[in-house]
Image 1 (cartoon, rainbow, N blue to C red):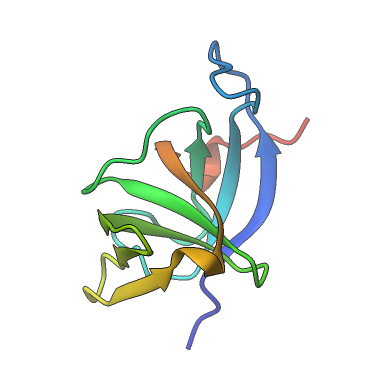
Image 2 (image 1 turned 180 degrees about the vertical axis):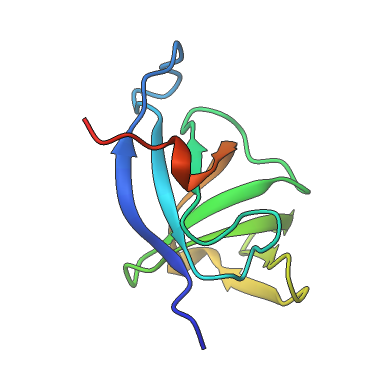
Length: 115
């Protein structure tokens, strides 16, 4: 079973600074979001935007795990997310979540150029 999640954080320049946090990109590990987001691709996160059901989000759990999923719904005490490739739905208690941030863009691994 592949190790899904993210393994690299890259600062990103944008014209937005909505919440005091700047945009950043995360490199995706694993295939839980394939074919929409491939292993090694980058997702660009803009922290000040709202998360919308049906769109992709990055979750940072209090355990330290980070994952990219499709947001299905938000409830008072939990959120429901889904993997694209198998339709696996996860219900995660809000107390287990450190942050939920919207994905603004997806970039192929070939687009990253180290500084």
